[in-house]
Amino acid sequence: MKKKILMVTSEAIPFAKTGGLAEVVSELAIHLSDLGHDVRILMPRYYHIDRSALIKRDEALGIWLKDKEEWTGVYEGVLPNTKVPVYLLDHEFYFGRDGIYGHRPDEGFVDNAARFSLLSRGTFQLCRMLHWIPDVLHCHDWAAAPACYLLKKEEQYKEFSETRSVLTIHNLGYQGIFAMEDSSYVQPETDWLSLSTLEFSGALNFLKAGIMSADRITTVSPTYANEIKTHEQGFGLDGLLNYRHEDLQGILNGIDYSVWTPESDPHIAPHFYSEKNIRNKSNVKKVLQKEMGLPVETKIPLVGIVSRLVEQKGFGALCSPSHGALFSICRDFNVQFVILGSGDKWCEDELRSLSEKLPNLAVHIGYDNRLSHLIEAGSDFFLMPSIYEPCGLNQLYSLSYGTLPIVRNTGGLADTVENYDQETGNGTGFIFNDLYPDVLYNVLKWVVETWEQRKPHINKMRKNGMKKRFTWEKSALEYLEVYE
Image (cartoon, rainbow, N blue to C red; front, side, top):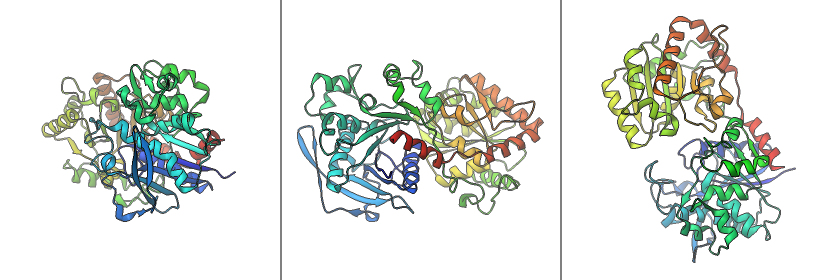
């Protein structure tokens, strides 16, 4: 039966993106729409989003926030080449500034509790304005989690009595934690029961409120769904997630193979290649080496990284100023590295410093979509040494391009990469367990030795990886089962 589904999110491509969340929301919405469902997206209209490409609705939304009514504009667009509507809340004070969560990835805005309470409270006002009540309210991560709480607390006995909520946790490490007095932005009048839902360890916790209130909870890989129930990776919420284990499910993200394919990727033109004819991959590698200022030599293995430069992604063990492994790896092995990303200042500064000392390390601070495609296609290996990784998309892109992932055994990385078998040459990448500098050093030694001594195994794994398919069609069907 056709369903009405509203995705509430802080990010969606092509409007706003800081990570994989934005891609997942848009791709899932598109594929659910392709299956015949009425899917719509609600998000803020940040300062950088061009209003000239949107249609402003005549009506304004009055949203009660704390002790006064805030009036917001509503812009409407669509996901490119689809009919999926995207509604963008426009409020100059809260959203008319540079940045989504903060001016830098490691610095959140002090009024984020108010900003994203406005988004959650505006969810229901938007639906009333549209005269469109969803069957499923699908909220993504902490910034939208209060909408699940408000559905249960305020709206379940009104027009939304038949609406049910799903909360998807894309990264449990980010919970939306604020001072407890900010709870009045979410719920102006709170009793002790409401406060117990919103409060965690003396602070307001958006994600906890969503976990307690959502009808179903999903996360973005089966392994991560189990990991977040452990003390080590539960970030304090493992007890609550264990309590709700019957309502918790891991669904692996997919990727768009019309975008991430070496057979037609415009960013690597004219050097297209495929699993049946991979020769042009070395030509893409030459282009990448030349552009990044590395010696142009196809016989040297090239390791790529495209990532947020934060501790979670393993950069402490990789390049910490006091003990990171990257300097020793580049010094001791015949290997090249290309790193693209932005994040914590210490990490950006250290990578810049290392690149000045190491002729086989090239670093680009920032984000560049074209360069990310070039790195995926031109690299021989792709390193993801994450402390934890809910799903991960780059290892899926890498497999599509015949670039062998080097990953830690965690989350979605464990669900999608098959470890190299030195006897048979089977597998699709290299997996390691512990995350210490000496472990990374030894893993890269293993990789370089395999490249130099067992090239037929490298070629076999490349073809194995390129045959794999992690599609959104499969994931969308699993989400529909959750909605049922």
